[in-house]
Image (cartoon, rainbow, N blue to C red):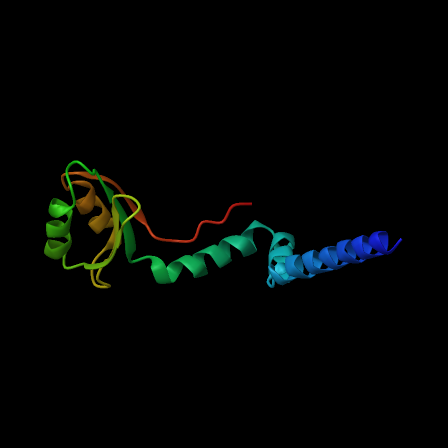
Amino acid sequence: MKKYFRASMLLMGLLFVQSTTASAQCPIKEQIMNSDSEGDSGSSTNRTEQNSPTTHTLIIFYDKKTGNKPLIKAIKKQGCTLLYKYKEFSGVAVKVDEKHDVDKAIADFKKVKGVTSVNKDGIMQTQ
């Protein structure tokens, strides 16, 4: 009988810990739930506000065989700042100067030898 009592108390304790952990992992639950009721116009406004500080940051991927030397030269030539070199995959994060046009910089970086893709940095939300 003691064995069953201990097992049931352990099970209840685990369930309690799991439920409190799950609620602690989502502190912005109300914001998420309320954004769905506002419709698409409210959530798209939030996306623009979140992406606006990162519009001058680009993520550039390059071919590993070609290497990053032509890309690094182009970054210096454009007057951009190298923020990060990714170790896991062939890519870099670059900050375009506020004075320069980001779309023009994207077009210029796409022409660099070995560059496979150029993307604006931002937050992607899936629903």
